[in-house]
Length: 158
Image 1 (cartoon, rainbow, N blue to C red):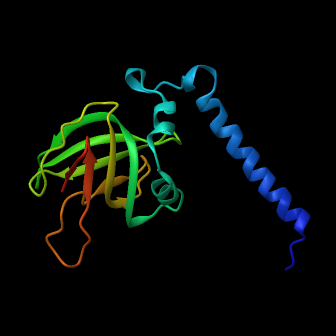
Image 2 (image 1 turned 90 degrees about the horizontal axis):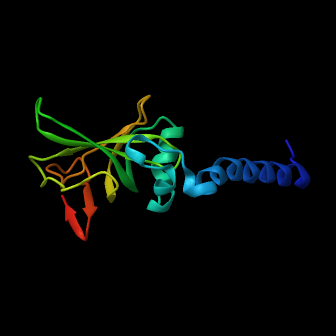
């Protein structure tokens, strides 16, 4: 099927317009006062850095995909102490969703975080209805898997 150039141009214009309609309200009018808990705003997530890999993985409902993302910490959660101990926290993306980070503290040092801190994370993403989880954020102990890490304040935790 042949698509005429004007139809393709209209499609690109529509995608651009939708993108502006979604992002403009977040960053205008008082720095995007779409406040999450504790006064945290989506404008802070917009300023954080590249989040495209995770947003694409969310849209595709991806399972076990290596991703790297830079985002602010939204909320610290209690450690998961069942099985291997994991430090757990949520990051917020510029699309308004949160992603759970499960960082194995037996394999890597604990990251000294507080809400609002910006972290860069590399690990394995698994989609779920709540936004997904990134785990395997530590060095690898097997040749079958790539190691991950968390960068924070100039230090790599792996």
